[in-house]
Length: 229
Image 1 (cartoon, rainbow, N blue to C red):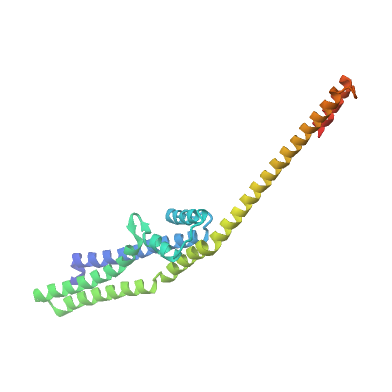
Image 2: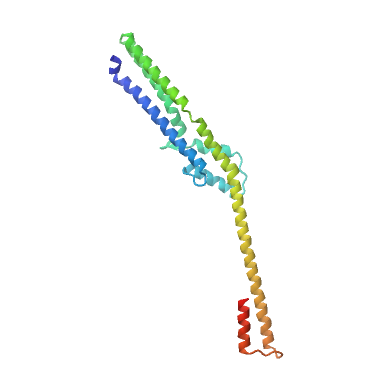
C-alpha cells in the first residue's frame, strides 16, 4: 500500500499510540503507589504524604484547630509529580496523542487532495488516523483513574481527620501519665529522704543527750537500719 510508504504519517501514528499507552501505564503505576502509601500512613512511602502527615501532626501538637483538611489534601495531591512532571498533566497526554492522530490523518488527506492522489489513498490515511485517535480516546476513557484518586483522597482525609487526632490524644495522655508518675515517684523519694533525715536528727539528739548514752556499735546499727529504710 502506498500509504504504508508514507513513513512520516505512519511513524506519527505509531509514536502517538506508544506514547499514549506508555504514559497511561506510568500514571497508573504512580497512583497505585499513592494508594498503597495512603493505606500505610504509619510509614508513608511517598515524600509529600509524609510531609502532609507531619504538618497536620504539628497542628495537633500546637493544639491548633485544623479546618478544611480536604483542601489541604487537594493542594498536596495536585502537586504530585512523576519525574518532575505534574501527574495531572501527564493524565492529559493520551488525549493529546489522540488529537495528534486525528490531525495527522486529516493532514494526510489534505496532502493527498492537494496532490490529486487517488481517493482510496488519502481516504485510507484519514480513516486510519481517525480510528487511531478514537482508539486512544476509548482507551483513555475506559482506564480513567478517578475512582483510584478518589480512594486515595478518602484514605488521606480519613486518617488525618479521624485516626491521627485520636492517636495524638492517646500519645499525649500516655506522656502526661508518665510525667505524673515520675513526679509522684520523685515526691515520694523526697518525702522518704526527709523522713530519714528527721529520724537521723532525732536519734542524733537523743544520742548526744545525757539521758541516753549510745555506744559506737549501737550508732552503727542505727545507721544501718536508717540506710535500709
